[in-house]
Image 1 (cartoon, rainbow, N blue to C red):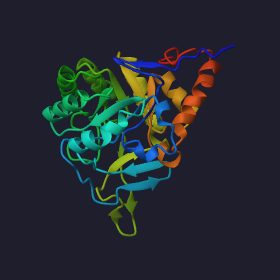
Image 2: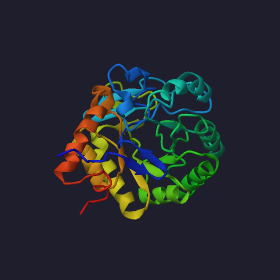
Image 3: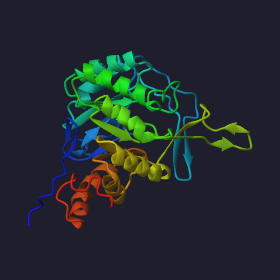
Image 4: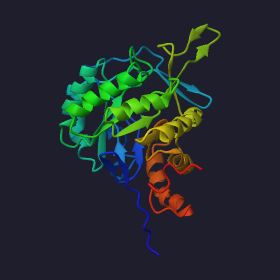
Length: 304
């Protein structure tokens, strides 16, 4: 019998050929991965977050491995939007898959300006608003207040022609309220979750190991937190969800679908297994068939 399983997924106005995306900051600008990953097969590529002006990022150490994940305090190190448009976007638009550009601003106007400028470029499928970076000054202000979140999303949606995704922080008391703010502002989807604020200490030197003191924890350690956040938002807010956090196996992917996500982003796993994303795409049809589902949509929000 022919395989009739559909892997396409819809996130508001954004439709992807499959739900496996790679998370911003973990896949470079895709050039770095082209020799080991069949990039055109991916549902979407999210290059490193860009800002209006170049940023040098935080002092070292910028990353520290933990027993079940990775702490990072990169500080949004990037060459700025001009360099991105000139040096990276021409290559990205040639990849044959959806390109979702992650942007970060210090003010609502800066978010809007960046999103409008990048969103008008050929080959950009959507904008992800990084409202939740935990290791830059002011980086989570928009993601910790529902009204601020709604304002920046709505202002961006009004001026940006492509779909808008809002990446939210778990470092809040009620994440569903923040997600509702994003939904009220017109976000096509929310991305749950960004990293969890943490730290590592060298007790012998009596110093923090990250140059920034604190950073964002990612990897397997945060998967239960991410699943909880996805479930809470799916239960309270009528908006598409992209799950992020510790995803490395097909079981992880299916758990996020059942909890309420319509797509997932692979992050930390890219560092130790660069081919993980395409392997998950290969394994997804069989997982859907195992529970007699013919599409991703049949599984989403199916938690009993």
